[in-house]
Every structure is written in structure tokens, then in C-alpha cells.
Length: 128
Image 1 (tube, rainbow, N blue to C red):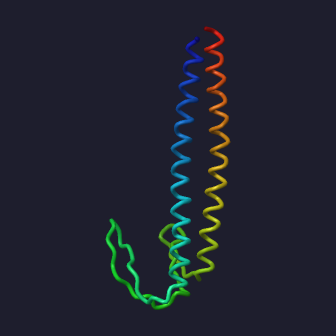
Image 2 (image 1 turned 180 degrees about the vertical axis):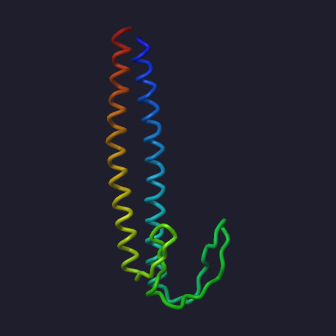
Image 3 (image 1 turned 60 degrees about the vertical axis):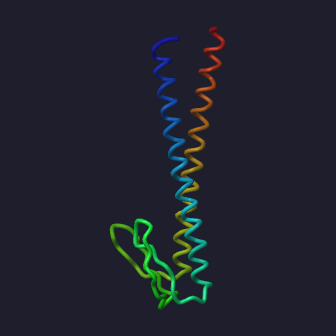
């Protein structure tokens, strides 16, 4: 096998590994957003006026819910805006949709790389 072929195999294998890692990250983000949707639904339906709110590093503080119709959503660059629960759910649904689309594109690229690697394996078998 020529050096160029070996380098191409290594390159494709490395790219495939990176894509698999990216798929795992996307899956985690999608799962996290789906859990957030469930939590938001629970809060909106709940009659409770108190809840535990995370402040970081698995530490929570008891908080009072004064108005369930006004949520404060960070939209990027440290900007926070008021949103209704339904507006917030729409934002989350859009984020999930974009992540699923990215996941599909990465999956397609990964399948191409896997096909290319299978072709290399066949080529090696045929030479032996």
C-alpha cells in the first residue's frame, strides 16, 4: 500500500472520529433541551409558588415564583430579554430543530467516511 493511501485512511479515520464526537455533543445538547422543555412545562402547570433554582456547580437556592408568565431568557452576548413561556418554548423548539438538522448533516458525512473506509478495507483484502 502506498504512503498516500495510508495517509488518506488515517485522515478519513480521524475525521470520522471527530464527527462521532460531534454527534455525541449534539445528542447531549438535544437531550438537555428536551429536558428543559419538560421542566418548563412542569413549572407552568405546577401550582407551587416555590422551587429550587440552580446557581451553579450543583448548588441550588429556594426561590419564589412571582410570575410564571415572564421568563428572562439570555439571547446571546449577555443580553437578557423577557419572554412568555410559549415564546420560550418556541425558541427551544427552533434550537432543537437546528441541532437535529446539523446532526443529520454530520450523520450523512460520517456515512460517507465509513463507506470510504469500507472501500479501503476491500482494496486491502483484494491486494492480499
